[in-house]
Length: 244
Ligand SMILES: Nc1ncnc2c1ncn2[C@@H]1O[C@H](COP(=O)(O)OP(=O)(O)OP(=O)(O)O)[C@@H](O)[C@H]1O
Image 1 (tube, protein in one colour):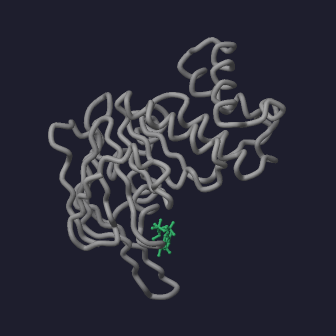
Image 2 (cartoon, helix red, strand yellow):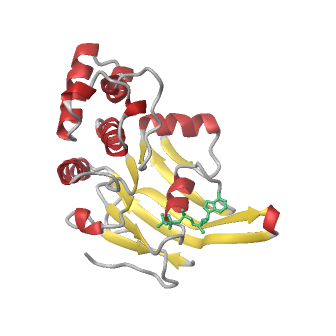
């Protein structure tokens, strides 16, 4: 897919994606697959950009390329970090790791649960790292676990044994406890019940208001329709700037 999306007028871009192209080389088949070619767009503070298109078009791959889980063939991913602009496609691994810790959040459907770490400790960790007193961090972690509907009996338990939906709630509580500068969302509502979906939308609205730039993939965008500012359609060849 080839497309160009202009930044919203007046918004200062947090992320500027320029001419991004990604290919997968399937050596065992002697084939190359290009999920997207020459994609350009920018996202400003407090903007919510919906990424859409049919299954397999490259939405998750684009998010993973921005997060630097994938490397692009060409193009740049300029992130205006708090310490200056950095091209995520070329930054050193150590810098990418720091940005992921402090400035770029990524919520997927999957929690990477760690053995023998309680749900409330997983959620409190970002606050503790900032130096918040342990009791205060724990109190806030419990607030978010409760907001997302994780039962009180599970707060001290290890999420490795949780159901898919329960794991996702822990995942969200941890990822959204602090406002990142850029938030990437890959189908975060996939395994959530109605109560948790409502809590998620309310938290995303707060984060948007706080200036967090967001790029999200939602198979049911009705959940977040009040938040969407612009749409990038990877399934279309032409520029897609859908007013919402
Ligand atoms: N590591 C990989 N190696 C080879 N091909 C891959 C790899 N990762 C993804 N793909 C392929 O790239 C294409 C885009 O996949 P991607 O997961 O980004 O699609 P998507 O738009 O998010 O789909 P869905 O809506 O089904 O989640 C698919 O055809 C997929 O098979």
